[in-house]
Each structure stands twice: as C-alpha cells, then as structure tokens.
Image 1 (cartoon, rainbow, N blue to C red):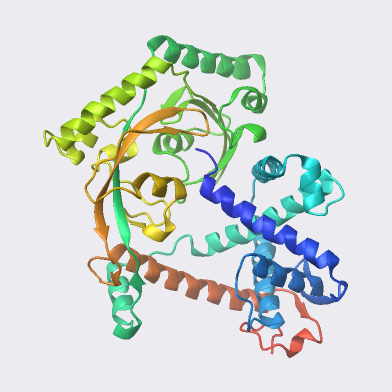
Image 2 (image 1 turned 180 degrees about the horizontal axis):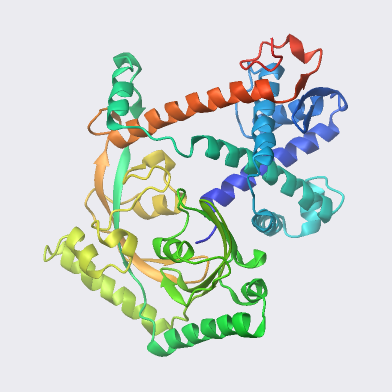
Length: 457
C-alpha cells in the first residue's frame, strides 16, 4: 500500500546525489555555466548539466575513469528525448503524487538533519519553496522518462522458444553466474480484532462515504484528516494504478479496477486494514484513485494471544506434527503467501528466490542467523500504518552460486531475454525519434562520436 522503504531510499539517494552535485557545481569556479551543449525537443542541456552529472556519479561511488563528457551528454540527450515525447504523447503524470513524494523526501531529510533550516543550509538552498521546486522538477523529469520507456515496451513479451534461442546463443564461456539465492517462507498471525473494533472502523468509513456522497464533503480532505496511510495521506489519499504493473495488494487492485469514474466503494478489508476507495479518473490502462485507510486498534492482550498461537504452531512444526507448508496453508493470515506454502515472492523478479547480496536489510537481519530448514522465533512486525502482526520465517531452499542453467534458472533467463528484446525495441524507437525530433547539437559537441545519430549525419 505504501511507498516502499526501498523505493523511497532510492529516490532519496538519487536526489541527494543531484543536490550535492549542485553544491559542488556552485562552489567550482572552473565550470562554464552558460554554454548550451544541445537542445532536444523542448529541453536545453547546458555545459553545466554535464558537470553536474559527473559530480553526481562520483557522489554515488560510480567509477568515472574513462567516462567522457561526450558520453555524459549522450545520456542526458536520451533522457530529454524520452521526457519530450512523453509530453508529446500526452502521458499523464500525477502532479499530486509527485508532490506527495516531495513531502516524504523533505520529511526524511528533516528527520535526518533536525530541521528544515539545517536541510536548506546543508544543500546550500536559499528557501524551502525553491528547494521543493527543484526536487519536484527532478522527480517530474524522471517520471516522464520512465513513463515513456514503459510505454515503448509495455506490450513486449517473449515466448518459451525465444527464451531457448536466447540462451543457446550465449557462448558457454560467457554464461552468467548467479549468486547465492534463498527461498524464504513465512507464517503470519495477525492479532484478533474484536467485533466491536471492526464495526467501529467500518461504521466510521461508512459515515465518511455518506458525508462525501450526500453532504458534499471532500474525499481528499477526509483522507488528509483521517487516513492512516502515510504514503498517500498528504496527497489526499491519491495513487495512480496501472493494470499491467501491480503495486498494491490484490484486494485493493480488484476494487480499484471494478469501479466507474466517480464511484466510491463500500468499506473493504486488506492486510493493512479497512478502506474506502474512490476512482477519480480512468485513462486506458491507468486509473487515478483516492483511498482512506483505517487500521484497527490492537490491545496488548490481543497481541499476546497472537504470539502465543504462533509459538504453538512453531512447536508443532519442530515436533514434526505438521510441516511448514501445511501449517502456512491452515494457519497463516497472509493471503498472498499461505496458498503456496508461505513462500515469499520477490517483488523485483516475480519469482520465489532472493539473491543474498540484494536482500532487504530488515529481512536479511531476520534470517541471517537461520540454518537451512530452521524455523525462527516469532518476530513482531509493524507496518508504517501502525498495524502489528507476528510471523515466523524459514529458509526453505538455498541455491549456491552457479553458472546459469536453463532449467534451474528459467525465470531469470526469461527476464534477460525479455530485457534484450526490450532494449532492441527502445533502440529502434530512439533511432526513429531522433530523426523526427528537433535536435540541435553545439558546434563543439558535434565533434563527439555519439552512439546515437544526434548530429543526423
């Protein structure tokens, strides 16, 4: 439901690098600040933008030895080409969603440094308004570029035969090596919510719904005042969903895509609590929605009972009275995993393996001391919405580092084959758009040996 911690960390990391680069840039006297390197569509790329990008790479720890200004300019031109055609194709971005992301970033920066004044001082900015605008502009360009690339490849698929041909085309000496991966299973027990608490939340959501439908109250205002989803509360509960790019739990998506524009759902339940949801706008495969989330109040004795129940389940597994897979099916309260034996799905790859070196830090800390097949002690987990639950974890399978194997690693090989097909399509798109888009490269930059035909020779 919420903007994931991993995604938020990534956004903060990129923005930090960009903002730090602007500090380094402003403090350097050697940079030519007013030269135009290129124009792509409606976007101008300055000499200073190239210098900023170089500083950005260094701040991220990316090796810059051998990286030329021409290569950096080429990459900037690609980004602007995507953004330009996203606007030309009327790809809609949620301004409120970007503002919400800006709010989260500012809040996180403020928590880290202590106050907004210290944040402005650290990033060498004059005022909060211009600082917010700079972060907004960075996010907007990123969003437009990503949307355009997604549109280009959204209908691309690969057949099993294409996957086989792709794999067989790789010389044996060049087959990829996959690092150690884990298959992780879990059983989740949620504290029992009392009937009175459940009814209180449902009735409150029904009252909100009546206020909006019958008395003209604003859904967005209700979300700002009452929703317990920190990822959307500040934007009035707004999210943009895409049918082919799931980002919410199934119950939430099913409700969102079943409603007409302007329609408000009855209260419904997900693993995060109870919601009402309104569809603001439908745009083909995308839908703008607003929602209000309320999470139940859990009493200490209810949390204690959940742990006691999980202790009992764990003991039965250890005593071989029931295996983990059957226990997950019978007892787990997490719908997304209980029907496949509690096995977690990797949100990055869509399969059930997690590369050890890329594990989420929180999950890694929970399983790092577990032997294969060992069941963890009950672990309490708290969502950002405040909802608490208990879980036990088990490393179900371990796949040691190995050379790619077609049968064993089919899903990964399929992903590589799909990526290659997508890259070819993107390159074809880029070649065509460069020819049909206004591009003006400065006299000095025309000496560059670009990968793409930017100078239209």
